Each structure stands twice: as C-alpha cells, then as structure tokens.
Image 1 (cartoon, rainbow, N blue to C red):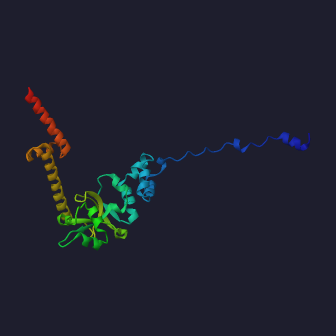
Image 2: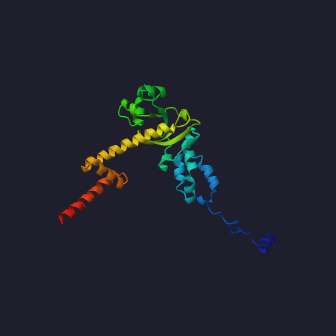
Image 3: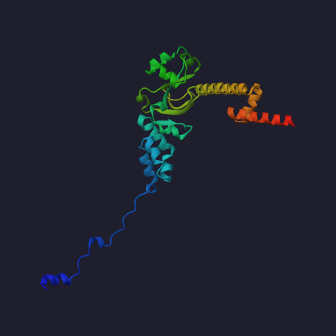
Length: 248
C-alpha cells in the first residue's frame, strides 16, 4: 500500500456536513407572535379592505383590526380627513371608504332652490335629489338642511367629520360642516320632526291594516316596541283568542 493510501487508511474520513449537529430550524412565525403595538402600527397604514382581511388571521389580529382607532384611520386616510367623530350603527360602515360615505351639510335658507344649491357646490341636481331621497325640487321646502355629495375630495383635507344618521335621506354618512361644527339644535329639531312623521305613517298603516281606531293601533304598537308587523300579529292572536272564547 502506498504512503498516500496509508495516510487515507490511517485517518478517519471527514464527517459530511449533513451529519454535523446544528441548531434547530426556527419554527414559522404565527399571527399571534406579532406585538400588538407593532400590529396596530401596520394596520394603521392599510386600506379598509385589507384591515377586514387581517381580522380573519387570528384572535389577536381580529381584536386589533376591530379597534375603533384602526377602523377610523383606514376610513379617513384616503381622503386626508383629520378626524371622524361619532360611532356608526354597524362596523360595516367603515369598510367602504368611498366618497359616497361623506357629505357636506348645507343649511337651507329662505330663497334656496335645488338648482341654486347644485350650482353653488358644483354638483348635479339629480345627485342632490338622489342623495337626499327627494322626489322633486319642492322637497327642499320641508328640509332644515340638504346633504351635498362630495364632488371635490380636496374639500375633506384636514377636516373633521361627524357620523350621523340623516332621517330625511335615510342614510348614515360622515358629514362635513363648512362652518366647522354641526348646529345641534337645528339637527335635533329636524330629526325629531322626521321621527314624528315616520311614527305617524306607521300608526296610520297599522290602523288601516287592522281596521281599528288610533287608540287601539297605538296600544299594539306600544306593546311590540313600535314594530308594525309584530303589532298586527299580536292583534290577530288576541282576535283569535276572543273568537275561541265566544265559541264556548
């Protein structure tokens, strides 16, 4: 055997790298490994659709993605809105950060007309009527204010908007007030009047459906929390009971 062969035979072969012991492979990171503060900072920079997707990752992500501040930030960021005050009826409001979710409040004054208001804000007459649930231009005379659809997003830059349910337009919007803040007195009067008209229409509908007087209709509406369908069902049940008693 040659000296080279002897050297090889007299020494152990080097260990293969695959057989060398090494550190364990790191386990993949899960959604719960993110610190809540870091996750919140990331979600603050995402659009509403991505925030909604993040809520499906795990419980921690759902909790952070459902935070009021995170939802508001995603909603207002595309338009440069500084702050949104108030809480919507449902969280679904935050998911559509479109201009249609915003409106400018115009206080109706003597002499105002729908075409004149449309010209002032550079919007279409049909858009104002559709946004405010108006069948004709004459609807302006029964309103304390009109909601004006936003045509120029720059109007919203640095603004503060107020989430409101407008009873005339039957929509929930983030309202921008050019004067800086809402006129709560005028708004509350308008909303109270609208609510009163709605209650009167419901009462009239129930009265005609049941063929009863106003007092009876009011009673059944009161015991069913103002639900006209439930009121009619309750009345029908009482009527059947009376008929059964009369048959004995």
